[in-house]
Image 1 (cartoon, rainbow, N blue to C red):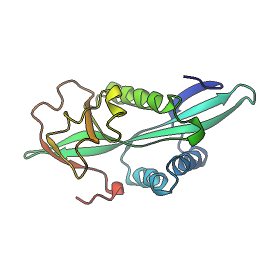
Image 2 (cartoon, rainbow, N blue to C red):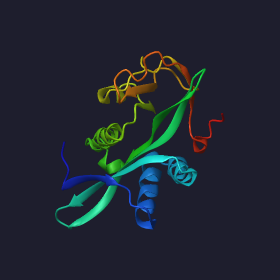
Image 3 (cartoon, helix red, strand yellow):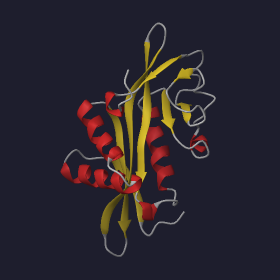
Image 4 (cartoon, rainbow, N blue to C red):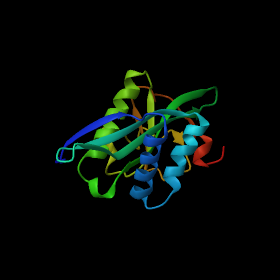
Length: 181
């Protein structure tokens, strides 16, 4: 893993500067505005649990720039009897020229750790089945959860071991995701 400079993972700071940088990282990473707009909508909806940025310090320039971003928001698993809080990981973005250097992995690991320390129990991701399992996500763990997504790409991670035992229900994402109810 090679970075020209040091990588710092920190929480976003409320305000224009970080917000604009995060918006542009998401737009560039995905090549479209959807994910950048999703981040703004999740903030407006008030469901953001953690929004972290990866900041690269350039040794030569002594400048810091945001090169990556990850967002976790509150979602629920609706069971027959109650509504169990979980965490949605989405989106995660790294600027194209900084991809494949492990920055995304750092953001995921750091974020999951923050959530675990806060007592969150279940994290859910829709993502590449070859990538997320290395962080503990598993499609098998999500089998008892009803979602509109392809089973292989829909994965869950127990921040608290055993949190999904005997839990079955339908996932409900924040309204900003536009998945309906």
